[in-house]
Length: 94
Image (cartoon, rainbow, N blue to C red; front, side):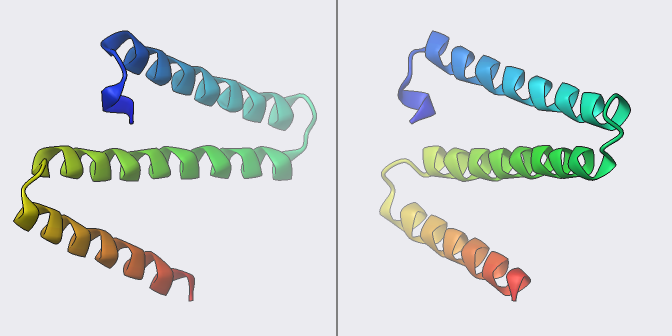
């Protein structure tokens, strides 16, 4: 979806994402230092780390799909890769 936006739209989405993470990073620091609520601060830090990891994973998936294009063999292999990713994440949680 992001690649269907005009170049300015893509930049805007990345800009909003950066502001979002900046806000949460500052919120973590504020909660830890001013409120002395280390548990909430650690939770917010974990949340940010997870979000960055998820965005990285999705960027990788989107790059693979963009690279494959309409090639049917490439789509098949990409589907297998995505299935392996899902199975791997399902097994980690068990």
